[in-house]
Amino acid sequence: MPLRDEDLAALAEAKRLLENPGLAAKLTNLLGKPIEKSFDLLPERVRTQVMVATRDALGLALRLALSSMDVEKATSRPLWHKLAATASGAAGGAFGLPALAIELPVSTTIICRSIADIARANGEDLSSAEARMACIEVFALGGASSADDASETAYFAIRAALARAVSEAAEYVATQAVASESAPALVRLIGLVAARFKVQVSQKAAAGAVPLIGAAGGAAVNYLFIDHFQDMSRGHFAVRRLERAYGADAVRAAWERLGA
Image (cartoon, rainbow, N blue to C red; front, top):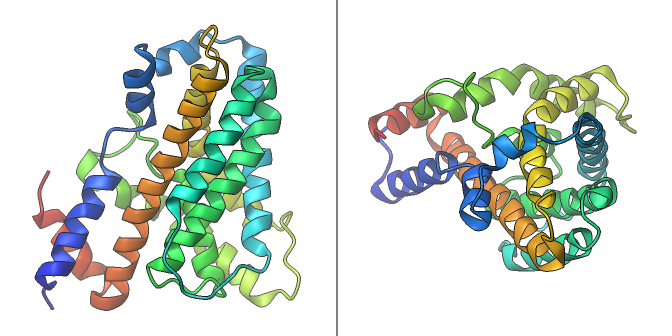
């Protein structure tokens, strides 16, 4: 059935959020330099550090997702999480790139909590393994590259690419009394998400490498970092909420009719 006007407006807002300029563009506006290109100039050891830190951070986020979450419905508190992430960025910015391995797991944990908060506010049942894996899925959103499909379908293309891994991971978690993050289904999901999340982490690292960025700059970068993923979360879980009400095919068709 066709979407009601208010739900169509919600879908349009979700599309705007999910197709808005990525983190690199926001960082470029903040710092006045092409962040993606600056990362290419970073030493190989820093790129390796980014890859290791990304996997460690997502591993921590997965452990959080596997742990007991507060499933009580409530309004989301994005500002509180932004303040916490900003404080973490200020501390990390004072020490520059060497602090990435310590600061990234902290900020990623805060982001994961914020994602779950937004998911719950959109009617997700966080006692459900599928909903928890959908929270991890958010870390893969918003990292557009030349390999992606056209922007109009990039969001659904990413979800399609992750669909099997998300389903297998959710099935594993749902059937195990104590889920191990080293299980193949979870390792596969983390690997796929990490490949995309690394893009945003790389951009964050490149911003942190700007000379004399300091605590204030680190705070600003982290503010944009969590703001980006809160936008992805609001869009993603709004789409999922509408899919539960109307069905995936109807929502996808309405999305495409909205145009660019």
